[in-house]
Structure formats: C-alpha cells, structure tokens
Amino acid sequence: MKKINKLILFIVSFLIIISTFITVIDFVSFDRNFYDLQYEKLNVYNTIGISSKELDIVTDKLLGYIKDDYKDIKVIANINGVNREVFNERETLHMVDVKNLYLDAINIRNLSILLSASFLILYFILNKKIDFYDFFKSFKSSFLFILFSILGISVYAYTDFYDFWMNFHYIFFTNDLFILNPNTDILIMMVPQQFFMNLVFKIIFYFIISITLIFIILYLLGRKTNDKYRVV
Image (cartoon, rainbow, N blue to C red; front, side, top):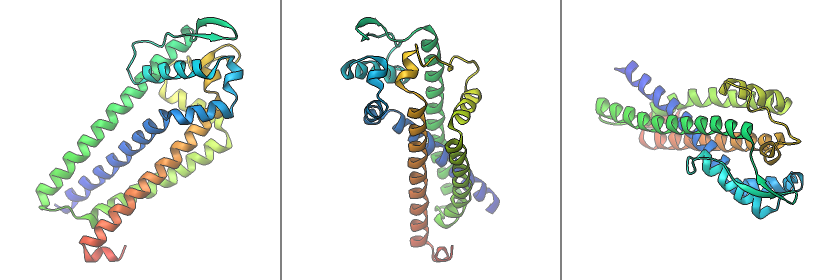
C-alpha cells in the first residue's frame, strides 16, 4: 500500500506541475497589456506602418483565432497608407499549426487537472485521509527537478535565444512555416524575436512563482496536520 500511495502522489505532483505550467503559458500569452507594452517598447507600430487602434483589432483577431473564437485570421487593415489583408498564406498556415498546438496544450492541461483530482480521490478512498507530509515530500522531489531544469533552460535561452527558439519550433512543429521574412511578413513584425524572449522569461518567472507557492502551501498544510512534518 505504501508504494501505491507514493506512486499516486508522485503522479498527482507531476500532473499539478504540468497543469500549472500550461496555465501560466495561457495566462501570459493572452495578456493584452503585455502586447501593448511590447508594441510600444519594440516600436512595432512604426515598423509595420499601422496605427495602434488598427493593430489592436489585428491582435484581438489573431489571439481570438488561436483560442478558436474565430474560424480564420482574415483581417483588413491600413498598412503604410494602403488597405490590405494583413496576413499572407504562409503566415495563415503557420497560425493553423499554432492554434492546434495551443488547443492540444489546453486539452492536456484540462486532462491533467481531471486526472490529478481523480488520483487524489483514489488516494483518499484508500487511506481515508490525505497525508500532506507525504504529499509534500513527493511534490518536493518533482519541484526541485523542475526548478533546476527550468534554470538550465533559462541559461540556455538567455545565452542563445535564437538557437533556443528555433529548436523549440523544430520540436513542436513538423514544417518550416514558422520561418518568416521580417521585412515583408506582418506576423513577425508584430512579434519579433525580442518579443518572444520577453514572453518566455515572463512565463518562466510566473511559473517558478506559481510552483513555489504550491510548494509552500503543501509545506504549511503538512506542518499543520502532521507533527512529523516539523522535520523536513
């Protein structure tokens, strides 16, 4: 029974970390204030030749499409004095891949939450209680592994973000549609490499804060409900 309990809590800990990570990505990636700040900081309006009002409309359409609120990303905007369709065929096809990746991630997040709740219920049925001391120990192992992994990834991304970002795309995409022309393709003008670098490090920061809070909560719950938890 003890081995089964450890396995269940390990699985729950892993699923909590996965669901937290995807939730953070979802929250940060769709934070419109972040987009507005980056557009100003990176001089995106002048680079594209578009007004802030029109870029807001384009951004809302783009993000809404990724969330499956729209069936396509077709949008007309005034760019350098000319009314034109914003995204070309290559950009449109790449966004199909991005949308599918996002929706798959959300499904994984939702499934992880459902499974973690189910395993906790199973644990409770088997033990008539939840031992937060053992839960903390299990989460602690996963927490430390993830923390050091994230730190390693952060060093890699900070040292050579271009290589990091390209490898990310090679892992998660099966084509090269993500390779766009920064001189002609509006999508890459909207979100250049520096934008994604700032986005990635914000995600990492929020994720570390989130799992650290979970770590602290489990520690406090265990310390409150179990005397042996006083020695960690």
